[in-house]
Image 1: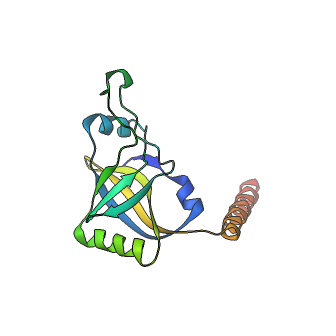
Image 2: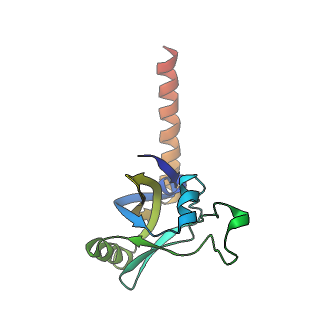
Amino acid sequence: MSHYAENRKARFNYEILEKYEAGIELLGSEVKSVRGGQMSFEGAFVIVRGGEAYLINASIPPYQPKNAEKDYDPLRNRRLLLTKKEISELAGNEKSKSLTIVPISVYNRGRKIKVGIAAVKGKKKFDKRETIKKRETDREIRREYKGR
């Protein structure tokens, strides 16, 4: 299993509550582009509308820019493939608990490309400071052990 893209800012800006694994509907050239590691999650999120989940604002540039269709949109909405039960859970989390659904990573499982998504809650500024402090202390501890 190899990872093609990861949303590192999501782990810093949000507290992850529940994780899901979803398939994604892509065009052939988009599959090649994702496998080449050209996907970006900058500002991407997931919405649930009409019993279907969509990945919004995820950028997948064309694999061969000069050979791409003229009307190709790298930021187009892409449908996520989930079970009805998972979609209803996500819709419930989005509405009642006012949680955000964000993509975490893109990877392959066998020959299929999967998207890891998560229901998240935004961190406050002091929580982010705690995360930074913890990271710094862990770094210092590792340096001390490495020096010995």
